Image (cartoon, rainbow, N blue to C red):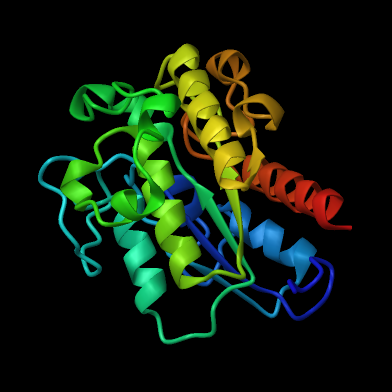
Length: 244
């Protein structure tokens, strides 16, 4: 049975892109939502495996690489390799795994041409075992990437509760593409029995507002300390409401 979210016994792992990475591996930087989330939840452990520039979506050249940390878009800078790092970590399994990504899949969709090429229904065209046995280089759509990675996590951490964060709005990518990514992640989450938090709808980061005056972001994409705190508290509250 999972530890209640308000108890001190939780172990929490987070994966994601730059807005999660901003908090640092130990979630000690106020620039990232993970810091404020940790201050509110006070878990037993909180560890980030996030990397700036990461995408959910793999490419035809993606291979297993747990050491690379380039900070920009790359074939191996993907959630898949963060999953491998978490799975290989010699630590007790987390009670909760939170994954926040999708911004770069929408922002750099030209370099991830397969990201939106497959519907959620099409991504469920094979059984779980077949998907688990796929090479990362074969998983080149957003929908299939979410399914593949969550299945890998469930296989390694069967008792963990997995939470998916959709990308928040950004001035760097069309709002409709961010929403499309969010819809895919949400639909996948429902099929995978994962709680989903729609940051593109619930976060105070609103692209239209940030274009006029940057308050919750530093550059339209990455959170300011104020934006990080707001997101961290939003995520903490959402999970408290779910598990109370």
